[in-house]
Image (cartoon, rainbow, N blue to C red; front, side, top):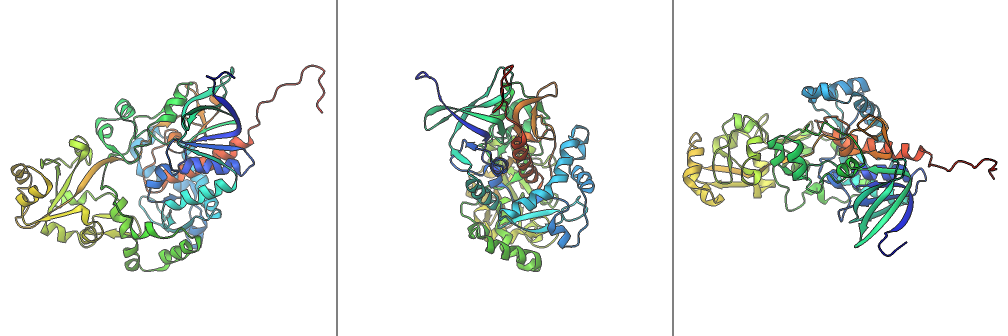
Amino acid sequence: MTPNQPSTENADVIVLGGGGAGLAAAVSAAARGMRTVLLEKCPQLGGTTRWSVGSIAAAGTRLQKRAGIQDNIDHFRVDMMGFVPEFAARDNPKLRYVLAAEAATTVEWLEEMGVVFSGPFPEPPNRVPRMHNAVPGSRMYVLKLTQAARRAGVDIRLQAEVHELLTNADGRVIGVEYTLDGVRRRLEASRGVILATGDFAGSKALRETHLHQAAATAIPVNPDNTGDGLQLAQRIGAALHNMDVVIGPQFRFPSAQHQGFIDRLPSWTWLARLGALFFEHAPKWMLKPLVTSLLVAHMSPTEKLYTQGAVLVDLDGARLATDQGASALSAAREASGYIVLDAKIAAQFNAYPWYISTAPGIAFAYFSDYQKGRPDLVHAAPGVRPLAAKLGMDADKLATSLKDLQQGQVFALGPVRAMLTITEGGLAVDEQCRVLRDDGQPLDGLYAVGGIGQGGMALKGHGLHLAWAMTSGRIAGELISRRMPPVDPFEPGQVAV
């Protein structure tokens, strides 16, 4: 080794990315005796899973059976496509079958690690309740998987930037080159590499290359998902699939600067179990105070506001069209604006079915909930011009935009942003999560899970992205562990000892 060559280490399995999918893959591999190294470019674990609501959709679970719900994977497959019928011709039915067949096993696997679920809860077009919500929230996935990874001996290295996938003369992926603490290193893996680097919503260049304009200019929910794994794999011949498919952008409020009540709860398993019992048996009116912080922090404001007269304006006060959802907002300055409503509309959205946001099957958040729980998002003024002064807008422009609203007290909700939760396209993969080349053959030694490895599925609906992240990670970790490492053939006449 010369001074310019990186030092070389060895492992059985390398996982790139420390979100839910990567942690699941690392735990699954290490639990089967694999020397596993997880490389995460950020200073903390969690990835997009940290930003999720915490739901996993699954069919045939223990919680469903306990509730007397009869379900099967074929119904689950059909109902999943009900969320995205426009993508039926481009779907990956084999992977969707894997998700439908394996999600319940994943829920049970997570329960064994200490993740506690409440539910199941309904969400149409699911014909039966399938949403299983982690208690008290998505941070439990990260916590319990991290604890399981450390117990299994996973070597977790944070702020590790991967530059290259290493291949041998046969094209097999044998490791990576990466930088940690300013030192370039080489890490080889006898079984292979699992990519769990998320989607590409955080890459402006990739958004502009592959997505329609509204999605390309939207604000990514997770700016750290910059498509690193996609580009690494593409450089060694990996095929991309459905890169133009995206759901959104969607209206989202910025996260609260201070944690809500649920986020402040300790992550004790026994407390989570008590919370799950409460969620399952308490009347909904008792649940609402506990989940309001979730509703006003993570959920999109309903577009019913506009059908009832509320007006969407940009940061300068100009009125925006709402017939295309958040697309108009994505073209505005900073992809941000405000939802303006008068006192009559505000009063209307204080009772069912006129809610501002909802967690399906659990609770609803009304205008008064936002006033109490997110006062930073509610701006009140005695008239249009005082509101313009408060928000730093052009008063004449705002007055023109709001000419149809009643005079008197007005409210602005926001800022509201056009945000991109996740992109649906990624690497082409088979049912074993192996990355494929353009000719449909596997790239030996390379796997992809989670957002980067959706293989063409469009996963609209609460709990489907998280279900695939955890399920594909679990499966890939198991299958890569079964893969025999390459061995040198015996020379003629050689005897094995």
